[in-house]
Image 1 (cartoon, rainbow, N blue to C red):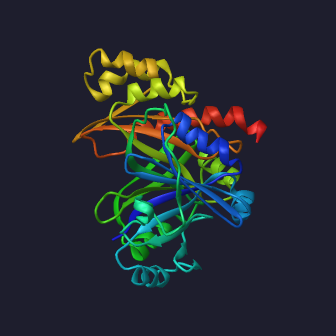
Image 2 (spheres, one colour):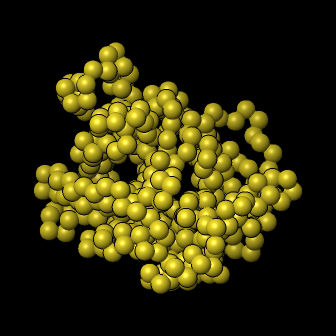
Length: 339
């Protein structure tokens, strides 16, 4: 069984990237590791381990893709057997315990038992040096990782899905085809056996007009992680606090809220809080969810982040995909000239 052990984020500017995650999003700096060609900082929040890495060892990824997630590490009980299974499904071996994933993203396989060197817990066998906690650190609102959105080239969606099914034991959870005007995209959600690790894999419909998925693939130099969705308990409070810290979120048209009660049901005065913070809402047969997406903080306008609060809902805000898509389209139209 494969579960996400940690995410590695390759960054050109190490200090500013760590500051964004720690100073803006509330991650806690836990340890640092320096080796020839690489400096890595380990950050934690909720159940998430995030490694920010920079240096010559990351130059090839950064040149091709820019800043972004370069490794989604999996924990598994039998690493050699997991490597053999993945390679039989078409994985390429990139290192002793590292396999190819999608685009430039790789998968490092680690045992489920964490490294407990010097009395501290770390996600892999790197020689981590604990760092003292920042005094007066920012409050964190993130409880865990809800899902990872992966964008792949047109015509590769179902091959990618099969790769994670056959190679890593993920199971297909749902699928959806979304049309917005002259553009369209196809998506499949896959999950680990426990349901704790979820990928939403998306490809553009090449027969339709190019849109934001195509734009991401071009700016990113191919397939990659488009966004990380962070699970929060109180999204309105989190959005207000993160805005105070300089995090920029996508905006939502006022007309969206005029139609919200008819689509989602009665939310009372809470609608005013949603309107004030631009938070989106959706409902399925199990309950409702609230979500909002940041603008990308990166020069290439690639990876961004989602906050999601689930109140029973098991879906991914399918009725909000159009609202997100249209918001990102507006961002794309204004940013294309600068990219």
